[in-house]
Length: 191
Image 1 (cartoon, one colour):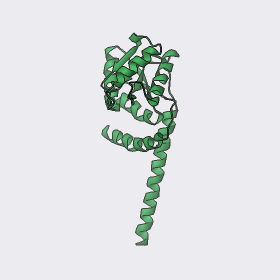
Image 2: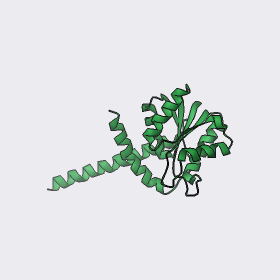
Image 3: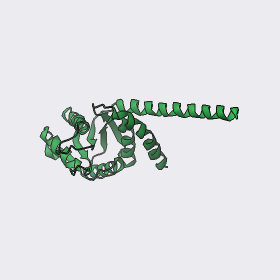
Image 4: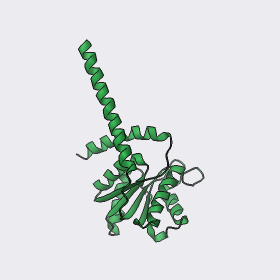
């Protein structure tokens, strides 16, 4: 019985260390921006406020994508998000915000069907192919960059960088913990 308890304690310790290592890897990868020149900044959606304005998290993502455009790192800003429970199209709110911040309308590509990371990646890849665009920078919260880059790569975009939004909140702890099994599940589904 003592041997079994010792084995369980060792296995539990190994699992805790593995989870901590995975969390650190996600954080480091997400905070290590890769913003070499690309065709498109793919900005993933997030909550729209009940008044129809971007939430602080979404605004930070948009501001980062717009910054990449203004600094000539990208030619286009692709905004992607579905309709949330607030009843607003994230894609449309995002597009309107980018245009109001000075991005020319013909430089904003809108995806209103990006309800998930995978859907955003598939839609972005299709829209990029239609325009002859091949490279992208994923823009989201730091904990979401790794999986977003994987999804875009799997959708056929071979040159994918990443840039994190400069917005941090206590909720990030939950999001990092949630991202560990999400990346694992996604990785296993890749076959």
